[in-house]
Length: 498
Ligand code: NAD
Image 1 (spheres, rainbow, N blue to C red):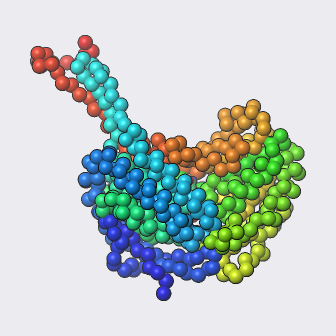
Image 2 (image 1 turned 180 degrees about the vertical axis):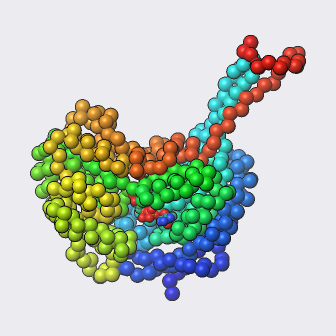
Image 3 (image 1 turned 120 degrees about the vertical axis):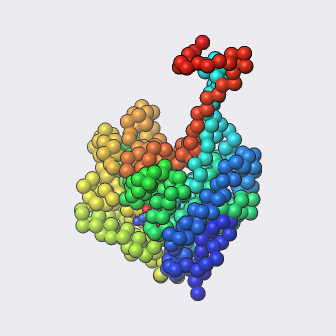
């Protein structure tokens, strides 16, 4: 019988059996390895109530104590990173090295949150008027919720809850129902680190659970990461219910290669960023825009590298690329490859027939490469979210930038060149939230903020970094007079600067 995964409410695993469960597959074998509880609105209410109770005291716990717990949590995540990575590989399918990389990028945000004493400082002005001082403080919002996607089950929640908790909020996480175990493992580590019950809760489930969080009057803010249609829905519904919302959406990331670029470097980068994690990264490169002579020089270099990629079970030491998350998703990505062929693009590498020895039931798809992809084709327009790299040819650099700037998505973008002037023009003109120059996946460090523009983000503030601290706090401005007792007296007029 498959293991049952339940919620985490009030500092412990939830005991009551669920009315509904969802299957959690092992994508490398195709076997159902666990069943995850799907929360009803009543269970979500229990989690929010637990968080609301904890918020009454957690907001007044000293910064020193909150930081101490975060430091302890940091140590525990570091110590257990191999176990967390193994859970990621078993449920998501990504290879071990990639899974460890994910945990490490999450750790960086925990480390950032450990600096909350400095990050959440207010400002102070003395004598704004005679004997009047003014200062600002940043206070927590209360209960905040995070709703996260399947592709980074450990890291994306860590973009949210360490900072939210450090700021004095309590948290309800609704992780992806496809790979829920990393969230449960981290909930236990937070408890072991000394976090009081109710400060961090996990509810599993689908739209039913999410909708209750969106409308619950005690949830003050929602952080969401996922696909664009759901991000838009979350933003519109959450704000309609008076909540602060940041909703990060999907992507179609371009990598422009100019003819003067180091082509070996560009080819390495395109293959790593296109097929890493089987293309299931919101910062994956999905379109190479080769300018002029760059295209013909890149093609053999890309093919040579793709031919050597080792696809297999992520737990096998030699594997470089694992399976896709589910059978339907694998089939959908393969269908896009069929479509690209019928739309007239040139298929240079075809991963549709790949089989992995001993893993016949796995959701594998080999790397696919298209050349001569045109902007009107669906394989160009849609976010495919799989190991499919498209190359589009542009006659000029301006045409390449125009292509990027007219795309509705604007999460990440990269330019490969050796020309400093071209790089500067790019940084200045490109309308995308995260920009790489000779860096294919420009994910900002924890002390900058992560977020796209246009259809890749709904809301005003990016996630983690300073924006994260601002998202999870609200500013209060205080004006104080401690008058000299000798100056007492009634004054009905407006205070004047004397
Ligand atoms: P998804 O949008 O299907 O699901 C994200 C979350 O929303 C999950 O927790 C899911 O249970 C919930 N959800 C799904 N359908 C819902 C509905 N109808 N109503 C309410 N909630 C719903 O995304 P996914 O397939 O898990 O993840 C892949 C997507 O996430 C890709 O589009 C990828 O680009 C995007 N992503 C974006 C970023 C970013 O930072 N911009 C990062 C990672 C992933």
